[in-house]
Image (cartoon, rainbow, N blue to C red):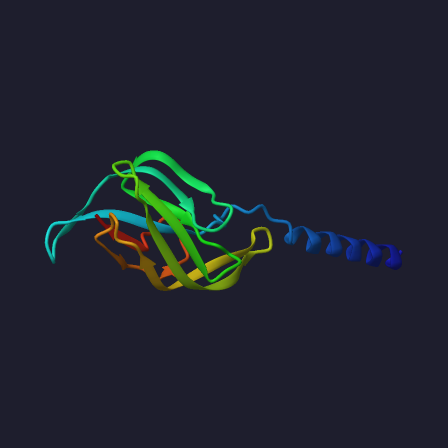
Length: 156
């Protein structure tokens, strides 16, 4: 009698312990680089602006088209989780020449939860860019841990 009760308690404990690890992931697991477009008025003033973009694609081979023919004030781009840099080609609608942006960063893996698994966070180190259309650029937030933040400002 005591043996049956003991076995039943053990089985219920094992089942309860296993069910605690099964979770549905309700958190966002994709982290993207937020880029905002701005118009420089003078050395101290600027305002956000819309940019008519012909396309945005990745620099690595084979190129991946991320945005095709759109008018945007900001964009969210995925960073390469397997390398310490990512490159993007941004071509405005108004020209045949495109600008290239290179972002260098450190990667860090974080465990969100057993249900969600790992996510890669990024810490931006430096940025390089061409100036065909871009007047200047600045890093406003080096920590890329959220999809809804602006990290880089491009001034046209």
